[in-house]
Length: 535
Ligand SMILES: O=P(O)(O)OC[C@H]1O[C@](O)(CO)[C@@H](O)[C@@H]1O
Image (cartoon, rainbow, N blue to C red; front, side, top):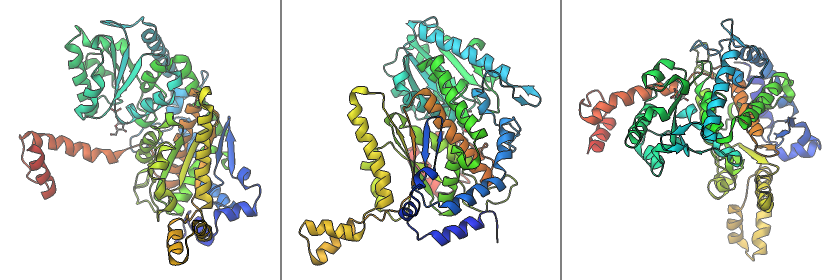
């Protein structure tokens, strides 16, 4: 059967044996030709097996899949999340002051601006000491949320540590009591602000941790509710929880959880770095939006990042991709991208309800370099499976006195992508063994262990320095990559039905574990585990 993927699959089969290095040899301008720059960032995808013909076919794939029309529909507030009947407008949260964006005929921007101003006022009050706890100035902020209500602000707070001049920030997500207990230990309830961050305000992990934290505070503070703020789309539920309306920051259902760091869910980040820096973060996202909307597909960074991803997963069959930031402060980026990419594009059914004719999105994983090098790069270099690697690296760090360490970091990043590309041949390995004095069968055996197949694909995203603006660019880049991949796959990237069944079963298992219900109807393994865990 020929479909929109066929020409690419046929082409890939034809070029499968051609080494990436041969592409560089044949085209001295390959590095520049297979790279794209946008607002100070460089995305180099030349160390992949994509040649000029594959590139043309990939661009055509984006065209025939209607990426440009769908992009316009998203930015215009059309309800492209059609299994939930919602618009997808996280971009409105970072749109410029003059923007007019309508949903159901209503301009949403006045509401966005009003809430942002309220957030900024509150953040300034907390940072300046105008808003106090019952024991004085706020020293610590605890953000209680999970998934998109945790990963974005937690990742960004860590990423922007050099700009963190507000109170200390803590993030509690896991329903495991260890998380909340370990976080609250050592904090003073009288000077702690708690932000309950939940789009729905029903998520059991978040509400359970909020209840626990409220009890912890009540033991020392007369009015714990006065030190709680809430971020949610559910104003009725935050009111029922006893949080005064002036400390509730609402948003609309057109902001998906994993896309929500730009708005009220980013309140903790705003308190950490201040409203002005937060604006710079939004400006970075906005710059990437502009690039995504205006650059031709062949020079469009999110489009190219998506096409490289599709080439590796759907065409070459590589099931995972590693995100490898050579930037310690981006150590939570892989976890953040796991939700962004896997919750968005981990779907086996197309928008029309039919089975997907190809693989869904890949498994995303990673750790910051150089730590990963001393852990799992062995498999990346010499394992039997190919793992496309996505490196991120800054031209400069925030530690001028440690510039030599930054140079070492950058050298390591470049060395890894070079090693993946070049590898080491058997002859080269034999020469190394011969130099060590080995001969015969032992030389051969030892040499085989030292062969690196090479020809392993990677991309590198390089930027100047991890500022709020650059972080905004990076997050928006990946958001739009997910969008483009989703459009081409023909799925709805903005729902998440796959998380529901486990939630339902957990609710039903709670009384079983408490002993008020039996294990009738449970499979043998689950019943056995219940019996063991009940003790
Ligand atoms: O913000 P909420 O409503 O508590 O949801 C938290 C997370 O739970 C999910 O719905 C998945 O269970 C995510 O999509 C979301 O980010």
